[in-house]
Structure formats: C-alpha cells, structure tokens
Length: 494
Figure 1 (cartoon, rainbow, N blue to C red):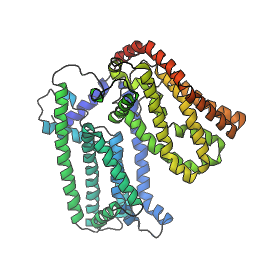
Figure 2 (cartoon, rainbow, N blue to C red):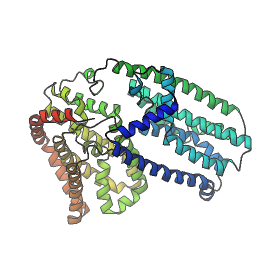
Figure 3 (tube, one colour):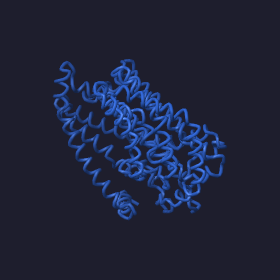
Figure 4 (tube, rainbow, N blue to C red):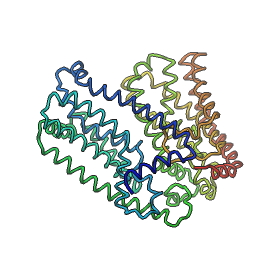
C-alpha cells in the first residue's frame, strides 16, 4: 500500500459514511477557514517588521522573532494535542491486511502530517522569512533558517504523536509534563527561564549561517521521529490485540473496574473526571474553554467592570464556562456507553445525582479560580458579581442541568471531535440555557445591578439549602427512568 492508496481510502471513507452530509459541510467550513487564516497569516507575516518598528522601534524584528520561535513550537504542540487527529486513529481498517507494521506506521504518520496544523504555520513562517529574514540574512543564512523552522515543525508533529501514546498509557505523566512546561514558560516570561535564550541561540545562529544549531535540530528531529515511530508501532499492536478476536468491541470507559466502584459519590466523581481526561470530545470542550475564558477577561476586563449589563451577562458565563458546555448535553449522556455497568452497581440513582452535582460545582469553582487573579488585578469590582452568580449557578443552574440530564435518551460519542459536532444539541437544552441566562438579565433590568445580585445570591443559597430535597427527588426520577435511559443509550448509533 502506498501513500496515494491511504489518501484515497480516507477520501472514499468520507463519502461512504452515513454522515456524508455533515462531512461535506465540515469540509466546506474547514476550507473557508483555511483560506481565511491563510490570508490572515500572510498579512501578519508580511507586515510584522512594520508592526515591530511602530510598537517597539528599539527592537530588531529578526532578533525578536528568533527569540520566541520555540515558544511558538510549544504552543503549536499544545494545539495539536487538543485538536489534531491522532496518527493511529485510522489503523483499524488495515489491521486485517498483510501490511508490515513499519510501513503502516510510516503511512499513518505521513497522512497525519497532511494537516492545517502544518500548512498554516508554514504559510506564516514563509511570510515571516520573506519579510524579516530575507532582507537581513545572506542566502546561506536564509536557507539554514528555513530548514531550521521546518525541522521545528517536524519536531512538533512527532512530539504530538509521543504525547498521544503517553496519554493512552498514563495521563498523569502528560499532565505533569504540562505543568512543568507551564511553570517553565512562566519563569521565562519573568526573565528567569532559558527557553528564550535557547531559541535566540538556535535561530540567530541559523540566520547568520552557523551549522551547529542546524545539526542540533536535525538530530532532535531524527531522534523524535524514531521514538514516535516505535511508540506508534507499540500502539498498533495494542489496537490489533483489541480487534484480533473479531468480536464486537463495546465502548466503555477504560479503568472502570479498577475504581472499585461501590456507589460512593467520590468514586463516581473520579469516574467522570477520567471520562473527561481520556476522551476527545469532553477534553476538547473543557480545554478550549480555559484559554477562551482567560482571553475574555484579559481583553474585556475593564469594559466588564464599567458596564452593568456586560458585568451581569459575562459574570454568568465566566462562573459556568467549564460546567455549562459539559452539562448542557446532559451529564448522564456522557456515561451512555457504560451506563449499564453503573446500573449493575447499586445504590446508584441518588448517588449518581450527588456525583453529578459535585462535578458541576467543581467545574464552576475551577472556572472562577481560573479567572480570579486576573479579575482581582484588572477589574476588582467584578468580584461581588462573580460571587453572587457562582451561588446562583450552584443553587439554580445545577438542579436545572441535572433535571435536563435525566430526560436525555441519546448517548454521546465521546471520541468524536467537538468541532462542527452538533450531537446532543436539542431545543430543550437551548431553551433551558436561555432561561437560566434570562433570569439574571430580567432582574437586572427590573431592579438594577445591586438588588439583582442580592436576589440571585439568595436564590442560590436557597437552592443549596434545599439540596437534600431536590437531590432526593431527582434520584427518584432517575430511578424510575433508569431502564428507559439505558435502552436509549444502547440504541444510539455511535
């Protein structure tokens, strides 16, 4: 099998799928987005020297660019890990064919590399090279620099493959590595790290024609490629063991039996956290909301504290930015593929409701803690709004979302991408979210900001105070509907 065969197979699979209409719409949107961002990146790269000259005329545009290229590689790798398709995700149709695993691994890596995460950075770096590096470097320096940035893109691609395999084996290792990298970037931003110095040494050297940085990058790319190849081969063996029996593989959450699940709320919360971390769609939904929430506060913090309407609206969104995307589809629907296993381990209904509330409250608290330092620094007047709306979400929004979840009969495909994916979006969910947002805004227009916050905080405290009552009621409702839910989840075509 050749590379053209693999590409032809993927193209045919798209149009033979039962979701070919959605695939067509997705492809059109991606093509439009690729053209839009391609043109935008060309403009950014071409006008980059002029922007630097206007904003910081004392800085050399080339040296500034070279000092932060490795930072761009780190951010690109993070984006790949969250959004890009894994290199081994298309292996199942080829497992029964007599294709050497080494060749299959190479083909999967190449087809995975044909991505917008490589095309768009190449467009941006090409424009930067033409506008910034070309006029300041010799022909040899320009060639070395271009080869160096290409090797950095290759390193990022291989690093993503290694992270994917490591995540499948032990997510805690990847999370620990991410924490260390985040701490390193923070130290580097304070002038205490070495990534900026390493980036400057590497790309300044390349632009001046020194071969040593090129040798270092080439060695790193070859080592990362070999490691990624071996790791993906091991992953192919694991996939082969899962499918070699020919039996239908029932989707379930890996590690369910290892939890020692006996109905305790803490065990069910741990189960939900594992589901979020180990599956593509919930992980993307939550991880993407973190930078979006931080960016919203950074860029709109002063405006939020000066406009009462925006303060009320965005205060609600900020306090539920992590919980709302996950629970708007119904928290139980995420458990659809192993809901039968949960039913086999009583007592479940009320305890499951309690665990769902604990997860909702934890995600709301994480939302607030994420933006709290920025709000305290940029817009301290927003703190009382966040506190009141946090109570409102815990006491009013939480039972509304949990009630909504008991009526969902469709399991969610947790390994599909979260982009252009409308599965789980129902009119009832949209109406419920609109109602939860409308109540604070109605109170604001009716009695003003301060009285509205007191009323919302009171409603939240009332909901929290009566939690044992409505949790017992939701538990009974779930108990009556548990078999209907299980039948609907089993009937879902994932």
